[in-house]
Image (cartoon, rainbow, N blue to C red; front, top):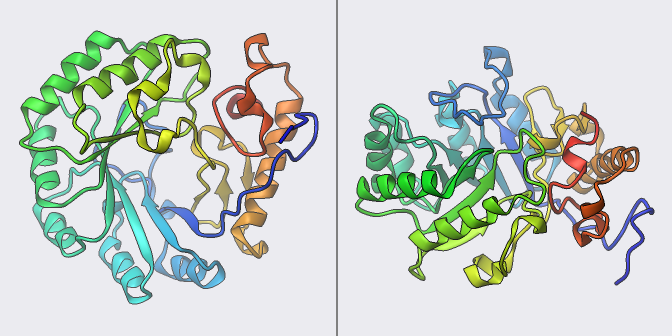
Length: 314
């Protein structure tokens, strides 16, 4: 299929009606240095009534529970009970630094997929708490984040620290990027760091996969050599993050693309289309760097790489 990037839509839209991210709270007991979450207040917590309304309005295959740290929500247990009562599939994105009571509660949900934030555990006693919880609860994956200024040497040291403090690690290894700046463009150190992470998890039981926003220009080698999960190097669809007030954003790095009322839409796909229109309109107002103009990631209707879009209106 050929695609004219000057057109509003390119390619076939992908339906998104099966998933939403619920930002339960902005509270967090960790606050990573690269965190993009705004400051917490009680008013930013998502209510049980609101969650019920979302589930009634949109037929969802699954929901993801995010924060902040979602287990810090004052009614987290009630939220899980609500989802269970409705037989709603859900997953949890957590820093895994909760207390033993929360650990015991989550152990009752052994079928729940958990993505465990594995960053900045070399501070205080974090790694001890993280190890206890990860070893007690079968988490599906652990998440790493590469930030501006990171080096291969820094990651070698951190990975050796983490492995020396763990008897076992989650199977999946998800690698994401700190998207607080435009530092990725043609920065092949990023690709080399990904390769370094892969080298520390060479066993077939470890799946390495990439989160959103991995432009092709970070690779100085063929990334297929890394044998990543299903060969996926870019986000197939941006995350749609829902907040307590009914607003929704295109994804955190592009949070300036926003809709104010999710309930004015009949489907998740309708919201995704309107957000994408905002995204593309902003893209067309800015001149792309020459290196980006031939990048095929820009030729499709959905977000596939950092390029211009996430920073277009800043």
